[in-house]
Structures are given as structure tokens and as C-alpha cells.
Image (cartoon, rainbow over all chains, first blue to last red; front, side, top):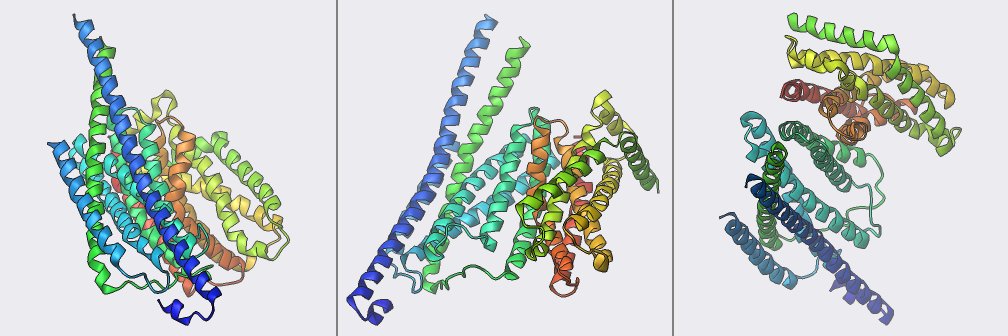
Length: 68
Length: 224
Length: 226
């Protein structure tokens, strides 16, 4: 609030509002970026899990056929 | 059983995070930096989690060398990878925060530099694991390297702090003050991040186990 | 006493093997020379700011050239299964490691001491006034490089992409030691002493050497024997 009280002109107030706006923008960029990184990592793990599961299945059936 | 644990941990973490978020939005802006300062509620807990992950990985590596139980090896690699993801989140939020308060994306500030060195160290741990085929050898070598890395972390943090305090810094930590009544939410967020990290580690452990199963199946297939 | 003798036998063997071919030392010195040459294009070698950068430059050359020597330390034992023979011999892994580290230390120091006057001449620096202090810094920094490099040479000996993995692992771990050595060298070149703030860097370098020597000796058996 303090900068608003100290502001002398319309120009100052507009500048201060812009600064606050930008502040919020960067806060949201930061949070979004961080969550996106964690989400991508989780998706990578899930994809890897799926790939491994598929390959295990394939090998299992292959081994089963050989045994017969 | 493990799936349940993942869900329980995840739900508790999410509930804590949502609860904290609602409170944090209601808090007044920080005096000097404004709203962007609130990124600290995310930035620092993530760093704590990453550092804890390094410690857990060191302990798991040491336990593997003593007991030769491969569960500890799997835990070490899982926790290191999760820690790297958290450290990456920490670096990126730090960079965006720096862009707003300092006006630049990156500065060779003490904290940023040490975080980057730790990131590179543990990334090379994962690369080392990738390049060794034989499971026992991979586990032993990786455990030794992990212990070497963990010894380095305090030395790196100390030395870079010392290096930077002697240099005129391009920008200063823009006097962020942390009000006392913000602290509970901060610590709840730390707890939430730790739980989230634990849940992710459990998920990663399952990957590691599948990987192991696959390797033994492959050996069987070759034996036929 | 027996331990010391075993260490010296291994060190002696390694130095002699290297002196017969001089492969690693020659390559390492030639590499140092090339890097010193190339750096003269990166900065203006005549300028005053060169003195501030000299410490960093010298240690980057040393770190890169040293890796060439260290890379071969355990890889040399691979043909004819020499490594298996060494591990099977009735010597503790710590003695084998320490012997190899001492041999590497001698070789790395030799390369560093030969390239030091070249550095002084190319970048017109009179190193004589502070030579003893500089030699102390070089001795400490070279040991940090050697102990980490020898350990990781043992770690990477059997793996794919050995030449890539060794620097990837070595340099980040060495960061604090290199920082200390660079800072100390730069201060010496600019006419400062090793007291005050610099004493802390010196202590850091000594602590780094001590901590990693102990850690390597404690853990090397896991790497060599399994």
C-alpha cells in the first residue's frame, strides 16, 4: 500500500499498478513452470512403467511359447 | 499396498497444498517485492525436499554397500531422480523470481551456483548408472559415487558462499522479510512437498522393480 | 610397514610403465600446450585483466591435461587382464589405490611443472617472486585432482563412454578445489599473499584433499573387489 500513498501523480499510480500486475504474472509463471516440470517427470515415469509392462508381457508370452 | 500408499500420500500432500494456497492468497503482499515474493512458499520447500533426497540417497547407498540388499540400490536411484526433478523445479522458480526482482534470468549468485553444481553432480550419477550394464557392478559403483557426491554438497555450498562474498555482487537479495505469521503455511508446504516427493519415489521404485524383472526375463530368454 | 612397501611397489611399477612409453605424459603436455595457445585468442594476453584471469586459465589447463593422464591409469591394466591380476594379488585395495594415486601424482605434477614456465613465458608473467607459494598451491590442487581422478578412473574403467564419463564426474566434484586453487593462484599472480582471506581457501583445499583421500581409501575396496 505504501507506494500508493507516496505516489504523487497519475503517472506514478499507473506505473505502480503495472508493477503489481507484472509481479502477479511472474508469480504465476514461476508456479506454472515448477508444476509443469514435476508433472512432466511424473508422466515420464508413467510412460516408462507402461513401456516396461508391455515388454515384460511380450517376453512372458514368448517364454511361455518356447516352454510348450 | 504400495499403490494405496502412493494415493494416500498424494492426497494428503494435495490437501495440504490446496489448504496452504487458499491461505497464502489471502496474505498481504510482501513490502519490498510484492506478490512475487510468495513464490518462496514453493521455491524453498522444493529445495528442502531435494536436499533431503540427496541425504536419503547417501544413506541408501551406504546401506547397500553394507547389506548388499538391492532394495536399497533401487531406493537410491529412485530418490535421486525425484530429487533431481525437485531441484530442477527449484532452479526454474529461482530463475523466474530472479528475473522479476533482479531483472536478470540468471546470476552467479551463491545459492544458484551451488544448486546448479548439485544438479550436475546428481545428473552424472544417473549417467553413470546408464552406462554400466552389469547390475551388481552398477549398484556398487553408483553407491560409491553417490557417497562422494554427498560429501561434496556441504563443501560446494560453503566454498561458493565464500567465493561470492568476496565479489561485489551484481544484484542484492532485495531485502525480503519473512513475517512470523507466514511461517506455519511455509512449514506445511515443506511437509506437503516432502510427502509428494515420497509418493513420487514410490512410483519410481515400481519402475525400477519392473526394470529388474525385465532384465531377469531377458536373461531367461537368452538362456533358452 | 608392509602396507607402505606395497604402495611403493605399485607406484614404482606405474611410473616405470609410463616412462617406458611416455604416452600419457606426452599427450597431456601437448594438450596443455595447445590449450595455452588457444587461450591467447580468447583473451588479450597483453592486457592487465589477464592477471585476474591467469589463475583460472592455469587451472583449467591443468584440469584438462590432468584428466588425460588419469584416464589411462586403470585403463592401462585392461589388456591381458592385468587388473584382475592386481586385484587378486595379496595387497589390500587401499595399497593398490594409493600406489596408483602416487604414480599419477608424480606424472600430473611433472606435466604441470613443465607447462608452468611455458605459461609464464606466453603470458609474460614473472612467477619467480612467489614461486614457493605457487608450488604449494599447485601441490595441493594437483593432489585433489589426482585423488578424485584416480578413484573415478577405477569407477569408469569397465564402462562404455569412459572418456566422456570421467570428466563428467570429475569436474563437478572438483569444483570447490578448483575454485580455491584458481582464487589462490590469481591472488599470487596479482601480488597478494596467502594470509587473511586466502588462508581460508588454503584450508579449504587442504580439507578437500584430506576428506577425499580418506573417503577414497575407505571405499576403494568396494570398487576394486566388489
